Amino acid sequence: MHLFRVTEPVPCVPAVYEPTVVAIVSGAKEAVLDGEHHVYDSSRYMLCPMTLPVEAGSPQATKDNPLLGVMIALEPRVMRDLAIEMQTAAGTARRSEGTPPQALALSRWDTGFAQALLRLLELLDNPVDTAVLGPGRLRELYYAVLKGEAGAAARRAFGVGNEIARTIDYLSNHLNEQVTIDDMASHVGMSRAVFHRRFKEATTMSPIQFVKSMRLNNAAMKIAKGKTVNEAAWEVGYASTSQFSREFKRLYGQSPRDWSHSVQSPARFM
Image (cartoon, rainbow, N blue to C red; front, side):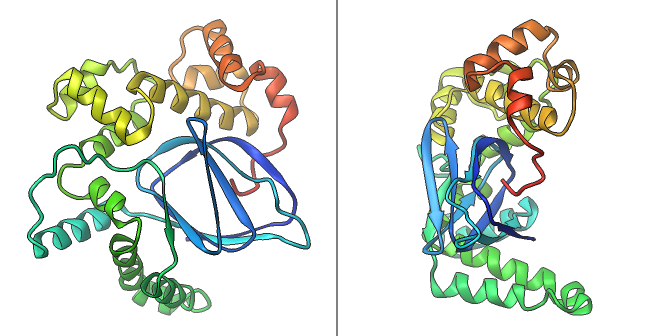
């Protein structure tokens, strides 16, 4: 869990979201996925049920109207166990075709989520309470998310039939390797055509576009942290620096070197 406070505008820049929930107490935050803007504030929290390449920031943050919020990482094993328990208890454990997990979901705060979040935050001042009670209260928050307005997206990502989310986990751990669509489809036991359709329904991007965005976003974050262009390109699987620079400029409108000069340290919360 990570509390954050931002007191100056932060433009949307490349980032990679891990499975997470972000709740805003003051101000507004923005995430851009494949050109679609998702803006959320104290009236709605954001669920990201799978690893995604996005652009994120808080363009409206000021000292008088700061961005205040909390980011809670989702533990896939716990979420998966809860989702399957819920599906089994409701008699819906059988896989539902044609309903891939939603890439980003916004949910209105409900009583269950608000109470679970407050109970979790109350532990922060006491390390013993956090160690003893934290796992149970985190599980309670996960359950509230699964029951809430964004619950369908969470259950599809972590429950039965979560092939797309599993594929993205696989891709995230093999970014520096050459992974084909056939490799990805084979990994989850689908035909190439079915896999391509379901992947795009879930993420709004084709598998190849997704892999490219993941690599370029990871590279941009590495460059912002001080890596050279060559180092960043190599670490995300590009054998050709010139190809990396062409694709980077096509996506972000600047060469990697020009972009690195235009951004500040990424230490600010994205």
